[in-house]
Length: 170
Figure 1 (spheres, rainbow, N blue to C red):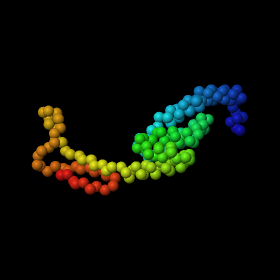
Figure 2: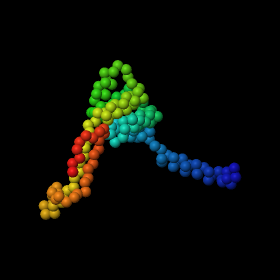
Figure 3: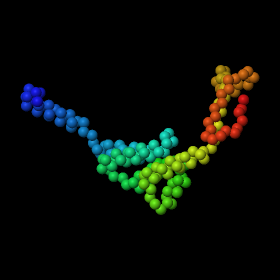
Figure 4: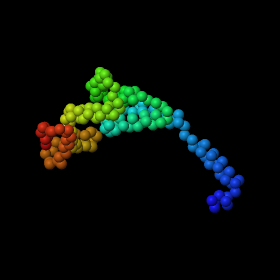
């Protein structure tokens, strides 16, 4: 009240006009924002950099943002859209969904995809990576394997999902 009484009406009107002009400058366009979300949604593919759960939740969140911008997307369409963003490893799962008579909700679909991801992890082949030392031949500029009998620092990297039954190479 004290400030209102000491500031003249003319100054208050100028400040209001100035603030309205600033608001007009920074108005975001809902159409541009919707276009950005649609582009992000359509370009998303599952690349195994995160879990399938996180991928589906991220796509569902973008669809919810689009819905708040009045760009409606039906749930069956979103399920098919997410299904098409999955890689070829999920081929059996895609066939299973397409031959199933019922339409899954996004939450049921999420649960099924997580189960399929776990199944694929258990069926993955065992991987073994071996690292050896190389000596640089300064004359030719090529790397050649060392043939000396001198003791070498052994480097051996093994990444295995289940059990390892191979021999260690010295």
